[in-house]
Amino acid sequence: ELNAPWTRTLEMQVALRADHYEGVGSTVNPKVGLKWPPRASVLLRASAGTGFRAPSFSELYRPTTFGTSPAFLFDSVYNGFDQFPTERVANPDLKPEKSRQFSLGIVLEPTRGTSVSADYWNIRKTDVISDLSGKTILQNPTRYAAYIKRDPFDGYPTLVLRKENQGALDTSGVDIDASWRGASTPAGRLGASFSGTYVIDYKRQFGKLEPFVNNAGRFLNDQVIQRWRHRAAVDWSRGNLGVTVGNTFYSSYTDDSYLPDTAPRTVSAYSLWDLSASWKPSKALTVRAGVLNVLDTAPPFSNQSYYFLSTYDPTYTDPRGRTAFVSVAYKFR
Image (tube, rainbow, N blue to C red):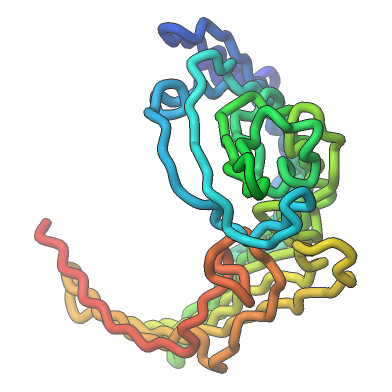
């Protein structure tokens, strides 16, 4: 890795990484980055590179495991709706995942203590290691007949979920960050921060024979990618005391449709407010207390059927409602 100035203001980073994985192969991945401040309060930055992920030992050689699908699935051949038995199978012939990524951004510091940045990013992954989802298999029972073992009497399916290189993923978006730190006054010091992401595209293949579909703003098969999400906070500090009010927000999206001809519906946006305070009587001791989800907001209703916990999506929501906490931390050095 080399960091070197080309001119008095233009800085360039060049990196090269070489890896060798026994049984998988070798790879060389470069990265190039640029930083240029046209003026003291403005910084332009860009980077481009490639990536590589070798399949894990578990993905290559794990013994077959038996269980049931996490989702309630519909099988048109069996003409039933159930959590069907599964066989999860490793694959010693997996190829590594590869990626290429690019980003371009700007950082502004209009005043001392204030910073605002925006970065566009674009990522493409190929040979993504995954197994076909049970929903994809059962929606195409003829195409994926090799992944279904049926009872000869009633046609009840057992799904064979084998690790494979399942096509590609193309995603892009914009990250926005802002922070402000006010001047210290006799009444204390105020600050604020904001971090958000807008997803432009999240196009993925759910199998190497499947077309690209856009997951952004939709729940498809096993996940939802919200178009927008952010974390914002305002804090106050004075001496050894501090108070923070924060908000976490996830935008609305099109719900899962797990049954044929299910009418489209929208899952509501999810917004949580938190309040916390800290007291630091010494350099070593910190006491924190707070309330999460102050307004006791319930998760929005969702039809998703991939996870055993139904009526909401447990990947980004918390069904516990308003929760209080206290923590004590002591550093011995």
